[in-house]
Image (cartoon, rainbow, N blue to C red; front, side, top):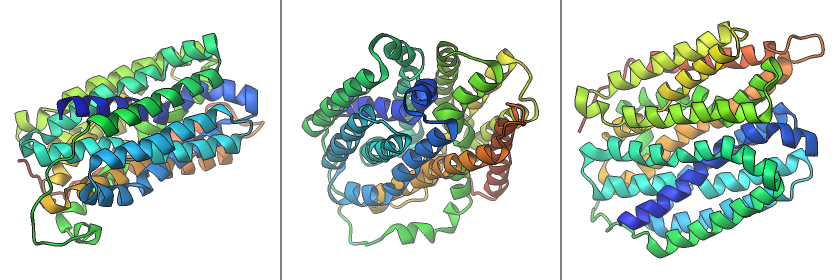
Length: 392
């Protein structure tokens, strides 16, 4: 089981990489195939939306088929196939199609791990184990910064994507060979996602899941690159450094969040406090988009650090889910968490386009995007105030 989880963690490293690598590829894709910032925002949004919509069939498959075959099959066909299609892209819509395939491929890998955690390990350890998986997996964020920029410079972006396709295929085979399915839960109860949606205790948690990763995921997934390039004239290498700092902050934030619910005896207020600080960070970036390169990067780092409460929110929600619906439960929560980012990446591409123009200052469209993130997160926090606290 341990070695299988290590392989799954490797697949999640690539999943994190694929959700964030467009920020570094933005300039070269603009030059080579004419993909503008709003094109890439749309493609990034499609990745998140596809990933989110796949959570319902993935949850069903985890409960019925198990994590081994579910993760291996989708990661091979979608992940490796999508990376190969990306490598052959000659137009912006090819990037969108590739990101849809990659979203399908990445959709089961983290939830396969969470499913195993919920079935095999003590409930009180769920948030910590989830944080470790996400923290280690966030190395993919790091790989998608300076290392990716260097690989593009040395080998070219198409060759780099072909190599990623091959690595993805090898990891998919590893999942099939080494991941072990947990023993099935013997029960007489039947249930579905509708039963989970009827649980009133989960209703205030859903909005928090929807918005908690908006700013961190949206910035790291795309907007940090075009923002720093257009407003401060940052080169590809400089953007790679800034995203590296943000990626490191996200890893540290994940590990800091992990044990706090056990140390402080509360999940609700750990989640609320961290997301409030993250909301203040993105609000400051919206209010002061011309504060300077380093102050802006510092705010981006703060947003990345406090935007990593997802494992604790998952643990909060999972505490209300019956064991026989574990697979559907974790994937439903992930649908809200990732779906929120996907919807807002699509929305922000439209907001950017609405505020962009030849006579408009470079920072104005980004200011509108950041303001949308801040307002949405504040609304989610207001709903979450009504959540019932629960620890294991």
